[in-house]
Amino acid sequence: MQNRIHSMLLGTGAAVPQKKLTNQDLEKIVDTNDQWIVERTGIKERHIIDGKTTNSDLAAEAALIALEDANLKPEDIDRIIVATVTGDFNFPSVACLVQDKIGAVNAAGFDVQAACSGFIFGLSIADGLICSGTAKNILVIGSEVLSKITDWKDRSTCVLFGDAAGAAVVGPANGDGRGILATFLKTDGRLADLLNMPGGGTKYPPEVSVKENLNNIKMQGPEVFKAAVTAMGDAAKHILSEADITSEEVDLLIPHQANKRIIDATARRVKLPSEKVYINLQNYGNTSAASIPVALNEARREGLLRAGDVCVLVAFGGGLTWGSAAIRI
Ligand SMILES: CC(C)(COP(=O)(O)OP(=O)(O)OC[C@H]1O[C@@H](n2cnc3c(N)ncnc32)[C@H](O)[C@@H]1OP(=O)(O)O)[C@@H](O)C(=O)NCCC(=O)NCCS
Image 1 (cartoon, rainbow, N blue to C red):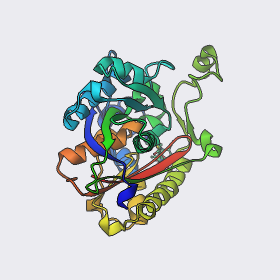
Image 2 (tube, protein in one colour; image 1 turned 120 degrees about the horizontal axis):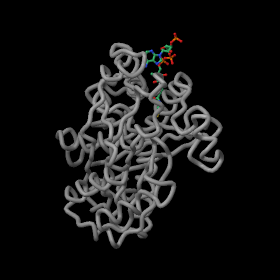
Image 3 (cartoon, rainbow, N blue to C red; image 1 turned 90 degrees about the vertical axis):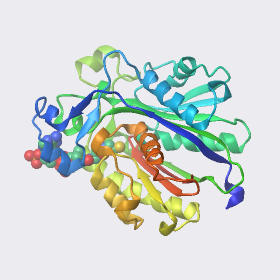
């Protein structure tokens, strides 16, 4: 086991917009109600960015908090990986904008696009770069402003999403057994149509996208729900076997925060009791790539993850994408 560990978490941070949008607020916008949203999803409120702040602003704020937690300076970072589907621009990447905003002058940055699984994809890349000796200290950020691509007239999607950024600094393991034990990634492009934003890319020119209302999230909710339950359960089971750990050895499961019913089903697949499952979606909704790093940061700061504890991350998202990671904190 020990010789498989190459990288470890050195620090975490998060940034969340101040403005909250409650279920009661949503009742005034679309035909919905608090009871429906809570029963079907578990979400009570979400945070929404103001008109001036950008994705890269949130990401930079989370990154600076993670750096302070890791006791490192921006100059110490040699890679910045940002997982996002809501970048400030098509290009340049959010990672390059974050590099400028935090003054990480020695870094090279790039974005990863794996929707809600993006943070785990970024973490896996960071682990590989550190393992190969290509990089030492890496910022992995999940940052989203989904409110900008939400169709506020579609009650089946607009109640689900929120804005946030979370960051982790990953560096070389120190040989004491702590670190990233294993990562697992999977995609199935055959199901790309279940959850996507058709506009904004090169397939549909801007005028077509606007005219046909393609610049927002489209989702076949029940189909996505079924795929998520299967994929997240499989990913959680797979990572236990890959990391050679049992459910009993897991101290905390941090699942992607999309829907409480999906999280409960995932926990059941790996026989984890609810007290070992971290849930904060009631406060944030689904923040896509930000959901896991925000939850990881909160769990650490609440004292739920101490040095040596085993934490399992598991995510699912559009693509379809899914993945998991096991970390000895
Ligand atoms: C979106 C989701 C909560 C909908 O729950 P559901 O139980 O599948 O509900 P359905 O879509 O079958 O809709 C059931 C009814 O509720 C209605 N409904 C949908 N959204 C509603 C809302 N916000 N408020 C009130 N009623 C709503 C539907 O119109 C439908 O009404 P009908 O039976 O009269 O046609 C659920 O499918 C889900 O969570 N899917 C996965 C979403 C997800 O996690 N996506 C991100 C993955 S990373």
